Image (cartoon, rainbow, N blue to C red; front, top):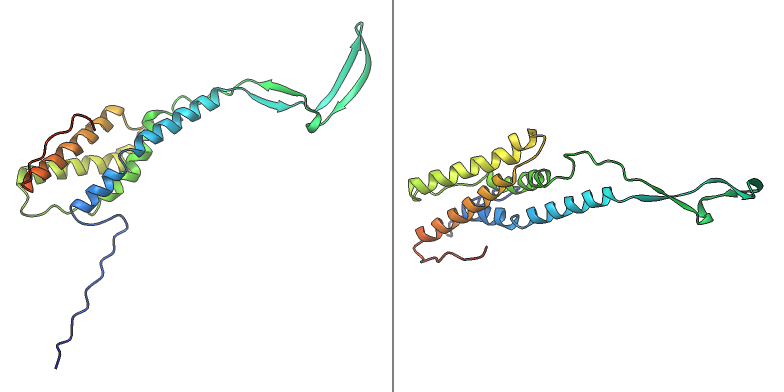
Length: 182
């Protein structure tokens, strides 16, 4: 008689669970920060451009200072006037606001990050501190700060992430070599 197999419990996670998998998902978001900033710069430039609105009303044709004829103009008449740009609120499309949106989406993957027990304590602590900092910017103070996330904080998070992945690679006992460009 065959022994019945136990059904495996299906574990679900909205943003990934484990150690390396959530880190890899976070890494997939790295370049999107640049795209968020580029889009915000494009929006700032677009808001600084004047717009053109159709002239609707009556146009008077004058000859020697006297009105000769009044012509009604509609939307399709082809006559437009330039509207000066509306002032953009100073903190609407900033790089810092773009980084706040980016970190909000990227940090979700770190909620279920589990650090292995056999990882060196110093490295495990460093990863945990980095994770807490990223989650704080993504879902804590990052949402409350009006001006957004400073670029220096983004640079720190990115550099620390690269250093952590390098240290994990050393721990796995491969012999990593740092890249000149990343």
